[in-house]
Image (cartoon, rainbow, N blue to C red; front, side, top):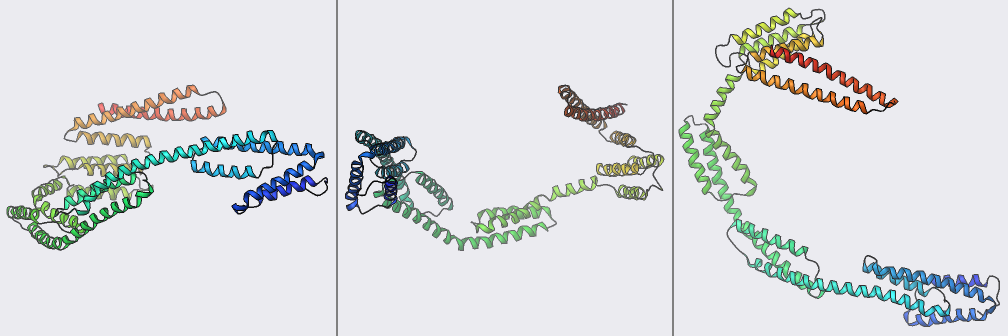
Length: 462
């Protein structure tokens, strides 16, 4: 201020102002006096430099623009999300305001009043927020006091029934969910309220743990009793007299129900073991019936021998010693004679045996000279027809086969129609030509398959 004006005086002053702004806060007792001295010196500097008045006015206008920008930011804080964040931002704006230099005299008070109004709007919003929060905390307090009244009786709860302990536990856990979902309460009541709640909560579970511990000895005694019943049930499994074994199982089942609870870890295991022994006795007649049915449905020893023989013949084929159509038909005739010779159920061929024979015949044709894939398909289809005719319910089997062929033909025809429709939409371009060729190829394959299926359908009807 007292030095002679030079061309870089203004720059030096700007640096001093920047240093002032960058310097941290001073003790509050000295803050205002230091601030007044600083701005008083700045005012005297500008007043003494009359020939640089324009520079001073320009600087003050720039200061005005800077403060107007701060005002705009402060006014926007009224609607900014998060009141605490808005208050922090407002404090920073006030700090920035202090470090901006003087503005034109006529603008000083209007700018300050506008900035002050924006600040008051944020503080008013904070007050409204605090009022709303306070009202909500009071509502929460009422709600938690009601929940506490429901929880306190749990501290003295006691019973000798396991199910009641479990139902009351579920009830207490539901109250806990409500408690945790209820928002904060006024800080003055929070500690005492939480302390009462958790003391009652823990007291209930302490009593519950003591009760279940007292059951351990009784449960172990019951466990030994149930093991004894299991041994009786398993011994009944070996009793050749079914009626006697059945009476034993009925008795031990009644006694089982009268025995109390056992340790949870063993409960499921011993129950499965006991039930398996009981079921084994009661299922004995059904099991014997199933075994008879399985023996009847199993392939006869002659069928198994014949399949092994055919498998050896097929395995011996080679390009040097291929199969023949005569050999193929001969094997089919021998197989059909096996089923025709059956004089009782289960003595002829089974469905599983037929499937194995069909597979072997396919392998035989693979090793037969002069047989094309189409020939193979036709011959195997004829074999399928013969197989259907030999079934007890041949008509139903033919109907199912015919339905399957018709469905496949219909699906393929629908595919061809869809491909044709898509083909008609292709533009004439290089890429479209490639797609067209691909679709035409797929359509041709589908048509060939349709013709084969129609031929098979015709054979099936003849």
